[in-house]
Each structure stands twice: as structure tokens, then as C-alpha cells.
Image 1 (cartoon, rainbow, N blue to C red):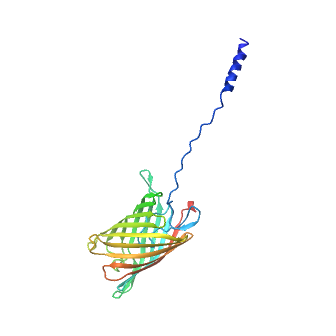
Image 2 (cartoon, helix red, strand yellow):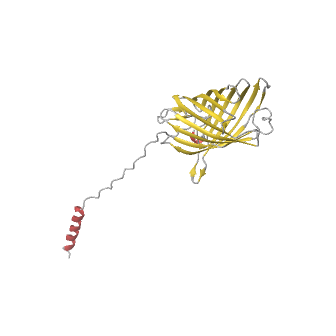
Image 3 (cartoon, helix red, strand yellow):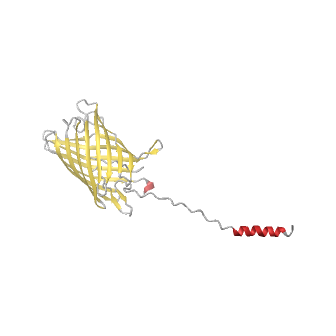
Length: 302
């Protein structure tokens, strides 16, 4: 037995030495998804993949009237300060200062985040014409919420709904002065964006339903616009926009506008020049606008 124990131990040791060393299991390579063709970018100025600042060339309001589906980032303010002029042979309307304030939030619905924009807008306006004296005051105000419910960076497609209500501020005599319509107007637009290699395309369709004013009819609005960056900090855009009753017989208006953006830091300046192509009032209208877009980021992004 004494002789057998060392022999047995030696046999086990030889067996262990004969076993090949354990090989590490091969790791499975995780396939990375391809980068998006149209990565999401912020409004105003943003940094591209190379870290260069690029101005957002998406057709947008302002300077155009056709708007895009994108919204400010969560906690970000976008404030547009615009001077707009509508000149015709009959009446000149001047928005001496149109204040358009927007704020980005990110609520959750059914466990999904929904990028949303809160909007409040009002103009300090004036009217003058051949048969009417100069009058000034606060024009019609707007409140709305834009919901960017679909955004696909690989297809370059984005969709938003943008319900708004337009109303005359009570106690300011805006309706009496002709600066606002009586009653209220509910505006229900759908905003569509499609990005292509060289241009960005935007389309809007909206229903405008008047309330508490039997003399006004429900109208529809449709507009399309395209935009393109000219240089890193310059972008140009154009639009064709129309409005009429749904039988195409009244309240008809077709306009063409061209706008340009220039970005520097957190400020973007813009201009617009436009002309009416068809209108029921029988007068040609010329549209001019100049303004400033101010972007205020949340402290975490600075």
C-alpha cells in the first residue's frame, strides 16, 4: 500500500499534465448599426460630425410662414423678434415687433418621450391706408403646442402636429382697430419634413376653424418650401403658400416668399422678401421682414 500511493499520485499527475490547457471561448463580434444618413441637429447653429458650426438650412418659420417639424431641445428657449411689413395699394400693415417665444419640453406618453414645443406669439402692429387713419396696438395673439411624434434619422423623415389657437387680447380694442379678427381661430396643422442630399423639403397642411364669428368661414392652408445651405453660416429657402375656403371660391391667397438665414454664436439673423401671386382683394401685396432668432440653452448644455 505504501508503494502504491506514490504510484497512484504519479499517475494522476501525469494525467493532469496530459490534459491540454483550456482555450478561451471566442467572443462574438457585435455588429454596429450604420450611422444615420441624416443625424438630428438642433435649430439655429449646430456642430456637424467634424465639429464645425453649421446653420440650420431647414425651411422654417421665421423667416418663412411654412414651418418645420423640429422643436427646441428640452429646457431650451427660442425667441424670434421680427419686423414684418405687408404693403398693398389699399392698406399697409406693419408688425413693428412680432414676439414669438418658444420653449422645449420632453413629456412622456405611454413610456415614450415626445419632443414638444410650447409657443406664445403676439405682434405690436399698425395699419394705415388711403381711406383709413394710422392706428396701432396689439394684434392677434397665438398659443400652441408642437408635438414631434415621428423622427427617423436614417430616412430623413420627420412629422409633427401643431395645434394652435389665435385670439384677440381682451380689453385692448384690437378688433375695433382692425388689427385682429373677431372671435377665435383654431389652427390644426400637420408638418412634414424630408431631407435629401442637397436640399431639405418641408410641407404644411392646416385647417383654420373660426369660433364665435359667423361671418368667417373655415379655410385650408397648404404650403411647401425647400432650403439649402450656401456656406457654413448662410442658408437660403423659398416657399409657395396658399389659403382658401375648401370650395376654392373665397378667401383665396397664393404667395411666394424667399428667405435667408445667417448664424453667429447663439444668434441667427434672417430676412424675407415675398409677393402675392393671386388674391381675392384685387391688390398685389409685397412682403418684407427682418428679424433676430435668439437661442438660450439650458445650463447643462452650455
